[in-house]
Length: 302
Ligand code: PSU
Ligand code: MN
Image (cartoon, rainbow, N blue to C red):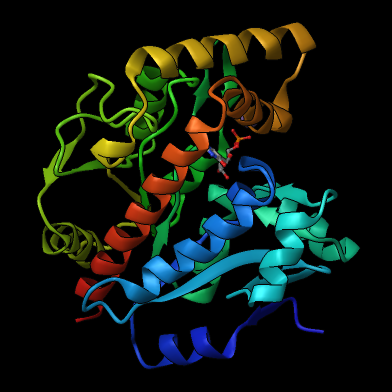
């Protein structure tokens, strides 16, 4: 059995040089509640296929029975969305899931690793990991992976449950530029701004594409972050988001949650505290980011 399989649709698109956008699976298995996670996973794929004039193809990435799979079909998406025992796979975890024949969901770092193996340059998600507030050594592998692997990640910044200034410092140290998509501020996921500056602002997919091409021509090896604010109608009021996050962090500290379990725990608590409003915001920004990523992928394919 081969360790990595690519679905026929994705394989053909890549061979023909058509735009392909990778999607992560930890957001499905650990980041959102069932059944919203399944509905949103399907909507994200549809948003990529339906992005105006892009012709882009989605490739959701996961590990199924030990096989790294690029481009899940609907039954595979459902399996991932419903299952309890899925391993959360960052860079370090992928070979363990493969060796043991497990199901695994890839984080941003894990998805970047596989996208690189598969030859996919664009990747859309919601939020990246970062430096946890009050845990200065809990630095997500997402930040270091972006520093080493040439994939363009389109996201809505990071949740302010993280230490955002420290997160931006680590990205800078890793040589990762943060491109604000029609914004001057690093977005804070549920809210459109954090008050923190981006490295540069881009107004269009072509604008982002020009930066990617310059990096490529110069032989740069690392990744690039494109940060797109949540659509205004779906943003949470700043006070509501901050209050929910502060309460979720209190609960995590009280329960002694640390390590890879911390991010999923906080996301579930925030969803409960906001009565699902956080999930609605999450959904809107995921779909919007898929459209933007599809357009950048199309510009790059031209
Ligand atoms: N942030 C979110 N939603 C998510 C995640 C982060 O708003 O679902 C997931 C992503 O898969 C990300 C991972 O790569 O959590 C980061 O986990 P950690 O902090 O353990 O590296
Ligand atoms: Mn961590």
